[in-house]
Length: 391
Ligand SMILES: *Cc1c(COP(=O)(O)O)cnc(C)c1O
Image (tube, rainbow, N blue to C red):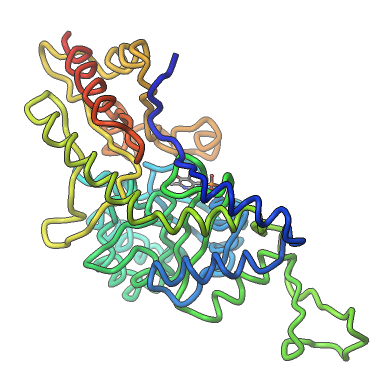
């Protein structure tokens, strides 16, 4: 009886009307709703190009390809993420490795990244693409990451699946420091299209590569043709692409959801502030608010993650988790370190390689946070958590 989930979508009458309108419009896919959503998303994020895709996993795949990942190349990401952040590299035939996290932000540690780059430079094994993840919606420390990308010559690909609406140094995530950024519209995320995602970039050449990879590697642009025009039916396939398109039905839902991004964001910020106040003084480590001592950011508050720090008189995380589930609260855990998944152990990863991510995973707990969570429900979660923490 999970009465309060850890995350859920917010669908209103406008969303339903937008989807109904598309269903009667004659265009279910490849119609005008796709570009309309892309343009609105790009504008809302202050970025030149947005390419809609069928999910963020597909977006990460083609973004890796567009940024040069492939056989003989290496991609690094955070161990504290959903498996898609690493799987995308393997889809391209690249090798994958991880950079441990910062214990405060739970994001890829800049110091660990720098140390690993120095070592890789000595061994001639620098990565082609690095994928930091804005875990829980808190932006990574992008300024020093950009500097490292320029110094060591890798591409910076943000996994911004949690980051719709987040900003770093006053700039929306997805607009400024990375070569490309990928957002997810899965129902647990900030805005939803059922399944769906978006890749943003400031670089028109990368955007064009993404558009081609999204749709079979096929072009219909006269200026791009390599062979003589044989007729109005003529198109050419120039690369091995995929069918990773978002439908017009989904795009219309995304456009409608995007109109409420500011109100979603305000509701999440208010609830996060409230958790901070209500949970202060409990034996818990609460989420950080800044990417580093010097950088400022606004989290999108996709997740509110507390850590149950082991101490005398305090129940352990597993017990707290079980008690909250028992109380009808759909708590969750984000994430078991990717390298410790059986599949990744099969590639040679072992416990102890990413100690900070492992220590974090042993005590993390995601508690409910979504725009329609009421103060009353939140108070219930807090009371249940207080009780559950008693050993
Ligand atoms: C949800 C998520 C993804 C995958 O998104 P889909 O749209 O479900 O493919 C990738 N990375 C992270 C960090 C996520 O949370």
